[in-house]
Length: 114
Length: 111
Image (cartoon, rainbow over all chains, first blue to last red; front, top):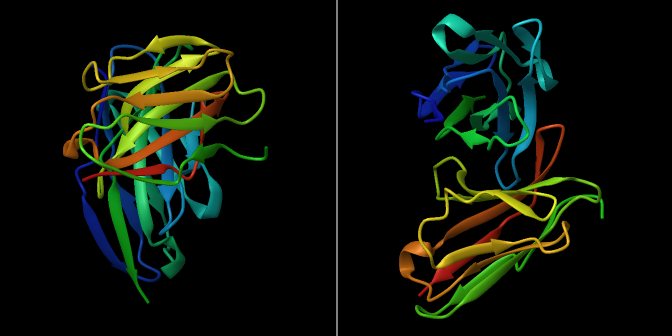
């Protein structure tokens, strides 16, 4: 069955610290992977996506993620976080066909200390 | 419109009543998704459509929940005989090239 695991429920960092949020997925086939962000009081919006090609994908606001097929992982990284990165981050997976649903992980809450 | 529009934004109802939640997707978007999100949790898949065809309804919790998209645009999620456990944020998203564009959500409270 299709599933996504985000093991870090709440991460607290100081400004300028480096960030890595874990995401592991389960899916029996070719996947498309996403990270969405939800800032306080706002709706979810796309941060970055992987469909194919270079496994290191870059998104908005300095975020990047690396698809490691052998580990079924798609971890999110940022070299230096800012207070404005405080938000909830959700990893999502779908299969390659248009008949495949998009499934989200339970999310990681990121708190940045100014 | 410019984005996905959901109505009502807030709905308070008594247990046993039926509720209908509406989603107006971005014009031209083929796919439309419904999710339920509890506080502190990720969006839980309910169902999705391509055009008017319901592709997958495996996430609907039970037969009190149903959804339709009769003309391939606006969609309605209906919950019959609501129960307190149905209280949650219901989110709709439409999709272009698999990128989801979410609406503001409909917060349902069942008393």
